[in-house]
Amino acid sequence: MWRYLKSAFLVSVDVPALGRVPVNVLAVTAFGILGFAQPAFWLLGLAVEAAVVPSLAFNPRFQKVVEAQALEVSQGSAEEKRRALIRLLENGAQQRLWGLAKKCSQVLDVYRSQQAEEYTIDSNDQALKNLEWVYLKLLVARHHLLNPSSEAEQTLTKKIQGLEADLRSEDETESLRQSKTATLNILKKRLATMHKKQQTLEEIESDLSRIDNQVDLILENATVQGKPQTISTDIELASDLLGGSIFGEDESAINALEQSYHRQKSVAQKEQA
Image 1 (tube, rainbow, N blue to C red):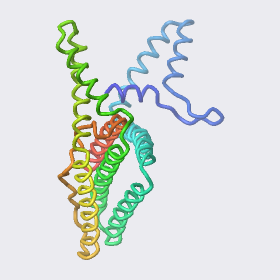
Image 2: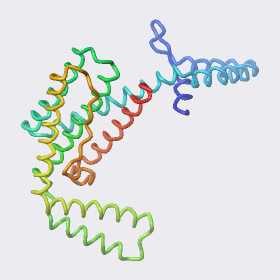
Image 3: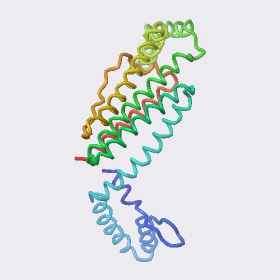
Image 4: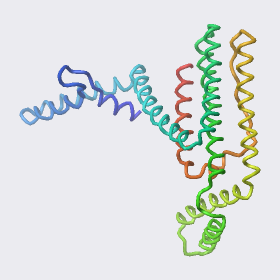
């Protein structure tokens, strides 16, 4: 609710020659200045803002505008992060991703040509975007496995031993122990990933092929059946993408995108409800 109140107070209108002007901010400033001459203006200004701002903030249409603006900013930021992840991939991996995206776009074109309901198209669009996102994560994970950082296995092992020695000490504060324990778990996951690198690469390639084939099947069904259907893209991966250590230094970007996509999905579901 604080977000809506803040947006209501800072709401702006277009004024010729001045651009966008924050109405309530100017009103508060004006009442504040006039109040030095006549203190009653301070009470009047307070009463006006107390009536105007909450009424606007609690208006459902205004709340939808605020959510749409926040979503637009979130989408812009998420798209930049997604492009950055794509740029780090080698050309072959980028081409695979573009190929998948093209087939997903063809699926939606088929449904539009069949005059499917808007709800069905939006739902299928979201499902296919989820598959594209999983596909990108798989490619990023494979990139880091094929292009490991300069930190050798021996270095990781020494860091793990050092942290384990620190945690055996009773001189650590509780907050520091929690931080070091979290770091230790991440390092152990990275070391485990190094030990089973080839197995993980094979699992990732299997998952990539599975998604390729699933999208091919979706496109074939959409073309042959001639009747729009809601797409189910639930897929159980052979590789473990939940252990964020597989994404290397891009783990934070992946997590940020996950949260952003989750927010976008929640907003879309509210609009459809």
